[in-house]
Image 1 (cartoon, rainbow, N blue to C red):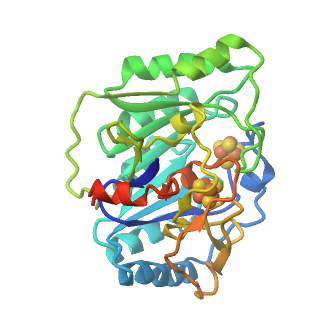
Image 2 (spheres, rainbow, N blue to C red):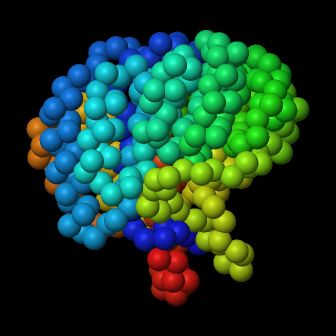
Length: 329
Ligand code: SF4
Ligand code: SF4
């Protein structure tokens, strides 16, 4: 009946930092690797981001989750200066990154402390398997959430399954997500159809695995910035958008959706609310003028495709009171 913050409202900023990527996955598109929008004006971005953070602080939001994706964000030069700015401006922000983990171990040794969450996507066509495994072995004790996101390439499906088996054998702390492919990585594309039944069965039965054998001992735990899945008559459960998609639960037409809690900065620099058609452009990262509100919309979409959009707080019609009575904040 709802996807709702587990502990207090928070701002969720997803920043698709550039269209530069060192991989060329066959299921991707040039919008993610074409190199037309390199976006290198660090000072400008810091100024605009500062005014966005001020808006949410003025609205009483305490949690900030800032999620960098691309392209490949670890090859974007402004990344580390911007992470330093966020850590100076916000009390205990949650900084997350979606990376193909292609940087060498030395990069992660130097920079891992900026990030609490690392989504490490495994792209079988380009990945260096041993480097990927070496990096996740390093990160598993140093970040509060490490997701090995296995992109289930159709022709090399068994090989990706084998990498997952290796991770299960060799890691103490992990989340493994076996991600169903879309036909081109974009929020509006169709899900890929796997002809072979065993592949469909595998995905249905193995979308999400986790193991946490060694407790984390991070000194700077971020302020809470997460949502729960709330279903009538069931205990609240931690939200997992990959599983929601696998279980076919990403249909929210008619629900109230607080798209203003979630900003999406595109590779073009547009700042928009959500990545679906309900969202609209509210500013540009280059000009510092951002027009933000805090009102929900009624979801017009047949399907909520993007993981970040699924994470936006939303409530089935007539259920807001019931959610509020749960007193989660
Ligand atoms: S899927 Fe990710 S890693 Fe692969 S080309 Fe696209 S942006 Fe790069
Ligand atoms: S499709 Fe858009 S409006 Fe609908 S639930 Fe997802 S983010 Fe909200």
